[in-house]
Image 1 (tube, rainbow, N blue to C red):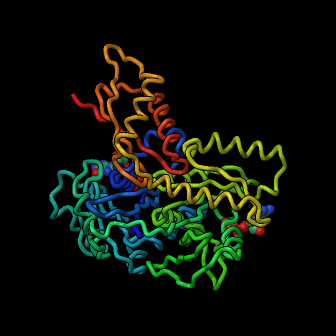
Image 2 (image 1 turned 30 degrees about the vertical axis):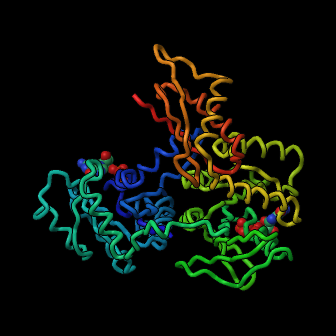
Image 3 (image 1 turned 90 degrees about the vertical axis):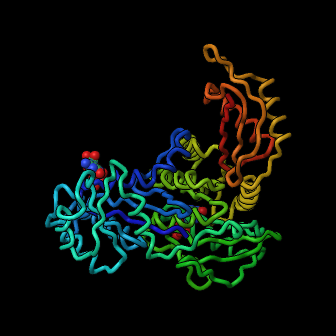
Length: 438
Ligand code: GDP
Ligand code: GDP
């Protein structure tokens, strides 16, 4: 499971700037999905072979008495509690403040691995100017400049060091074991535990009693109609004996980790609530992770036809970037509509691992061009020559040709539609890359 780094510090020291730098590489991947809402406090980062989740905690006010600060402090505490490592950011230019002392005290008491970063240190001498920060009693002070990108690599390396992460070994790259790892994700109260318990109570479903042991994740392996699944413990869910029960505190970190661990994510919405901001954020994480996804709108039994219409419309407008996913309306409680969900989960998994040969891809491409050729842009007419598969899970299609930088987004969507139809890619994100040869 990905380690979690929490950025902590008083306002204005540069936490968001650092966060953006740590998580930026991933932004490019999802930049072209219109309507994507994301929570800018959680993001994926990578350094070398190691991936991590970064949390920007906003302002930290350990003793804030009331109002928004208290709420912020609460969220920060939760983030810190869930983090594997804390990066405590101070302002090298402003120097030490009373607040820094308070935060340091809190972190020392917590006893979590903490790295102290003195930001805005561009052009500073490491020695004299930073020496006052040793007073915080958190060990070494690392000068960085978030805005200039200095010292960041060393900082992350240092932060990850105490976790003793194994070097990923290519030969151990995940082989498809035939088991579909499934995460049921969604806000509190959408019906995750009801659904899972309904499933696990079905006699067609054979549960094995083999709790997984990766950190504190709990998984339940089971088989349905000959297909093996592994249910991943998700945010807000805990296994208690034979049933899952909802726990009160919703954890974005757990949600993210479950999504990352899964092969397929079932995103559960609550029909009585429509699509909320939190739903859209979770959907954004799923998309960013590149995981296969199935949408299910639960509690369909509880609303009338008029409301059903509204819910359907809110999904179209608020989650347009999940158009590629199958959507089901269900009632976990009344056991309605559940069968087709399984078929979509299996289909999404198959689509994510789809193998597309160069000849077939190229045929589909050329047929599409023949049906409708790309628009000329000034002197340039893009020439699409052939396509090959550049990756799996999620699938990537690389198109080769000339002047491809002039291919419009609308045309790319047209091509995407043709590929999706030909290869039956419902349920998986699909990336199309253009490679122009000059
Ligand atoms: P946050 O409130 O801790 O999230 O801080 P921000 O990331 O919003 O940054 C606060 C201010 O510090 C902004 O004006 C940033 O441009 C500036 N800043 C951030 N990092 C650096 C840095 O490395 N050097 C300098 N000189 N300014 C920085
Ligand atoms: P979780 O927090 O996502 O695990 O949600 P729960 O499974 O605890 O369900 C929250 C509430 O929604 C409970 O009161 C359930 O009885 C109710 N609920 C769950 N599924 C359905 C459903 O299909 N229809 C209706 N009407 N209520 C449901």
